Image (tube, rainbow, N blue to C red; front, side, top):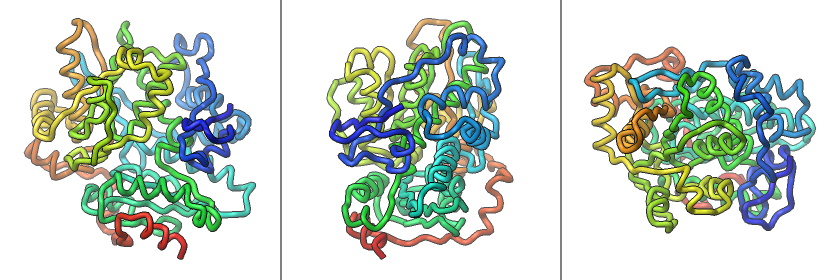
Length: 431
């Protein structure tokens, strides 16, 4: 499998080179030369396969010969060694809970897969790899946990000061060792812009072997397909599901759409957005206009210029009508998000986090306006404990802190303040 730059001005590379470099030399995102089709009978027999077998079957074509089968099987096994339950909320809507991994967030899958791939590739390299990542919330913790102690890999995480939740901040600032957190006095778009500029700066690239652990990196993005297959494995309805994904940088829903393009049955996708509604507007008007990010209570989705949307356009061959027929979007404000958390908890005794609440409301509205008999599921991307102030206020009770994060509250936060400029980041990295 070869990968090409979506800016169309860089050499094609294999999976290993795409994963290590993160971004193409022409600043474009890498995209697979062809979308592999699932083996015959795979979907029909999916309930008879283990998580590991599904993971290997889906990922092998994308990895190609860059990782041998035995090592890839081990990487997959370590990536998906926790549960992905599809939990019924009511008769029409279920929740795919993606918060049962070590950092209680869906990004554990991509971070664990990528860290193990880089560790594998780095065995043949003399130079240490510096993983540079921007986070709007959960990416930082998942990447920090996934890469902690990996030989030959140093991780630098940029996060917007005051714009991540307490648990999220502790997860990315308390590990130490090969993990460094830079606390940026700005928003996520500032962090993401700084990271992107670093990859194309000649001085930095002469000094450091840089790669990204954001979903712009194929090793982070592609394995996110897996939990869509795990959801379908548990799907009991005759009609394919309508899938609603809380969307910020659009890597998650893009992975689901890629899974659909390879043969996974999906009736429709909904990109559930908060006040950052660039894609919602685009699907209504055909005009794509990035905007400055707006802060909301669903902070991991506070992205004004989603990097991965270009990959979605590529999957649909940049045909607006083809995209619009398969994907719709709705923007949900904070008040509606809070109200949804309250109502779902009162009516169905199910606790949503703010991102899941945005998705639930969007899916509920869609189902009310389509044929009866349609059913679907949301992606519940993070445990509610990561957003205690919002959730506890909405449900009028305390959230029990899971054992997986209880220990964090006894650790000391360690971060380095940084101005929201590329020159500040470059100066720090050059030191």
